[in-house]
Amino acid sequence: MTASKLMTMHDAIARHVPSGAMVLLGAQMEQMIPFAAGHELIRQGRRDLTLVGPISDILFDQMIGAGCASKVMAAWIGNVSAGVAYCLRRAVEQGIPRRVDVTDYSNFTFALALHSAALGVPFLPTYSTLGSDLLKKNGNLREFISPVNEDKLVAVRALRPDVAVLHVQRADEHGNAHIWGSLGVAVDGARAARKVIIVAEEIVAPEVIASDPNRTLVPGFLVAAVVNEPGGAHPSPVQGYYGRDHAFFAEYHEQSRKLEDFEKWLEHWVVRTADRREYLKQLGTPHFDLLAVREHALSAPADFGY
Amino acid sequence: MATANSESQIAARGYTAGEIMVATAAREIADAELVFVGMRLPMLAFLVAKRTHAPRAVGLYENGLIRETPSPQLLYTMADPPNLRGATQCGQMLDVMAFLQQGRVQLGFLGAAEVDRFGNLNSTWGDRHGEMQRLPGSGGACDIACLAQRTVVLLAHERTRFRERVGHITSPGNGRGNGWRTTQGLPLRSGPSALITTLGVLRFGSDGEAFLASVHPGVGVEDVLANTGWTLRVAEKLEETRPPSTDELAAMRALDPNHFWTK
Image (cartoon, rainbow over the protein chains, first blue to last red):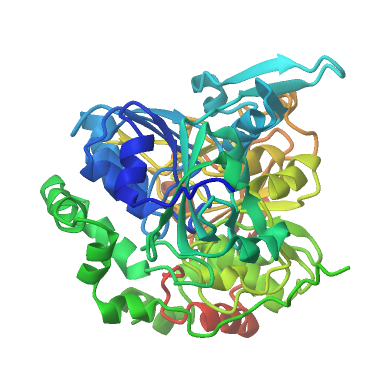
């Protein structure tokens, strides 16, 4: 039996994500975004990170605003229910707090970049982005002629993050993880990355994971650290655990519009907040409880008997 | 709370600008089609189509979701928990992108910050009085614009958004017209089908250029031309957009009673 990989968020980030690393966050699209991990990266003062993800809702914006990133490789950077990302705009247009270089992907080409790394090949072909300025400006997308039928195709270069941080519903202490609901690029993200940090709402016995192996989307041997962090994806939702805090996204939109307001927001919710437990305390019990699942919807059990 | 603006629009003509766009978009969906749904107004259009004329339409969402029944609640994002409950399949992004690239997806909806006379879309770099503004980017828009059999774009009809040429092609339409898509290597059966705006509906000629096909009730052709940044061609038989029906309004208001999306 391998040793437990359970550790605190502080230790997982301290041990596995140095400055300068390429970090995959937000692999499950608008669900299960690892905000707690992102905030810990900000608190530990990481710099020159390359943030990669298809979208990340407002997490990339916060990390850009905090000065953690020098590069972003993504398909969409904004506030999904409210619109533009103000910290991204300040960074790209004015270099505040520092210049950030953005490499634009589409969702499909981003997914192919991870899938390519997951398969261990240097690129994968697609027809997507032909004729677009994404193809012209992103050096990891190259047009070529198909060797088998003369079609024009785009080669999407493999993308291998140093670390993938995935928020999941449940995992065992070895990192075998169950995920359900919105998957996005999580499976390929885990396979593509050199290391995986699993952030789980619940830690369960290995037997629980093995009882439903179709739902095991990350095998533990890929995982370097397991963090038990209930509420760690707030304000994004976790299917079966809590809903999306739409008001929080709307408030962030207003409070990030001006630089001085964003700085206050960051102080209040991240810098002066020790950890996720304190963050949730600050959010308040009635507030977080309102997001709780009101009507459970359990799937029918699958019989693995023989 | 419904906004005062929505209230006054409804008092004047029975529906909001957003509502006629949603109803018009819903009618672009034929029954049993596979539809790449996207966010905001298109998400509502899909739900309206499902509840009215296209009950067998199937929705595909970029997070990997396939859904055959309308979501029971208003959605702010495609990954909101109500959109996953009762779904047909919760797969990976590549699973739905595979269907798109195979050419199986008949229709994809898009939004954008800017569009040009050939239906090219920009959602990456805005231009405000000569200053470049960084916008969120493609998401899945470029993929849909390249690979869906038909694409339908929804956006506000403003002169600053309707430009002669967009400065950045995030999602290719008909390029510079006249077979441009084919020379780029894009699939033969793909490309822009309609632009549904706050003022009317634009479609595309065989040369790839947009023309005004219908105006919404109460909108004059001159209003449309004044809000378009190029000399827009007008159909010989210009139509008036059919206003939203009682059923269509009931379907969209059941989901968005406070006009969060349908301002």
